[in-house]
Image (cartoon, rainbow, N blue to C red; front, side, top):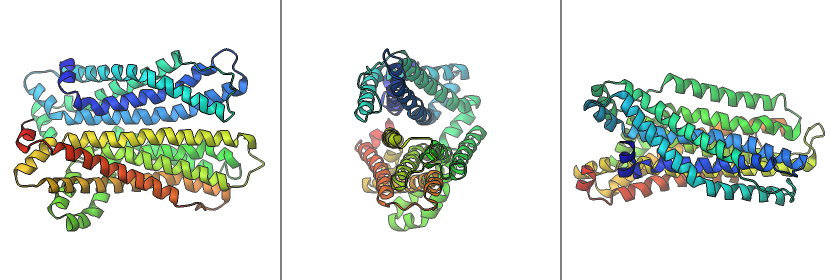
Length: 450
């Protein structure tokens, strides 16, 4: 049944496949630095740089990739809640349904991982070339892509895929068939206790890194990046996990203006966001991560570039270029991945609503009204993502500015922040409206029948 579902619903697994494919690519590309560091004739300095690049950048990439894969798997399983409830009503056991879901995730994970190998090999080679061009790794070091890259990349992707599918399906499988059908029709806005605890742990870790940056690393120069860079990542992940709760106050704040400007479309947009906080939270997560991580890392590097060198730093001045390159690699890799996840998740969420759009059109809504409703939902998501992503970046920007310049507010340009915010808003609105436009091309009667 798992293989038949994949065969007949390939579009429904597109978001999960893309997140696994890109995740495996990123992880394997950086893990290849471990294979390269273990090669013959690699000097100690080059080996240290390669291992650092793989462990630091690859480690953070691993955290973001796990979050993205689990998020898309969660979205995929939730969208099929009514299907699973129907299977239970005709006699399927929870174990059979769970095995089907895990089997689907495993197949998608295997295919995505294998297809990612060639792209990851090219990405790892490009990364080594960049390190050699900036004189951080000797030009005599030969590139290697082998056991470390394959085992780590495939292993993590499969773990995230199967774990995400199993964890998400668990709640639905515990319900009776009747209760599952009701839950599929009426979404609950409650978050699980485990998710709340995980969010608190991540937020606490981010705050802790920010406090360490402003206290222990005060006056230590570029050493403060050791904790400052982690702060916005941990904090942003924690806020992203709280998405179902965070989207509500933003919706309440924007409800009046949206209803005033959009009329019936604005009213429907507000009600949809309020009643679908879980789905909206899945789309909100990559927006928060993109905004928080990009803002925190770019401003941290901007502050460092304008700050005077400190004699007490354990990092020699000639290694500053290596640190700057590392930061830009981090922000480039994570931001591109998060941006793709914004598009991927929003397109998957909006495309799934084809039937809903058809029903609205059958009861009198025009295509422009449907597009207006989706656009206003995108405004809410963009506003919430930018707001809480900006809050997530504060635990990096303010402590690092205090540690390096003695001032809480950094003396840097607003252009960086405006560019990040504009990019996040543009990606959100373009993804929502583009997917909605494609969805309403289908005749309303046919969309309802699908």
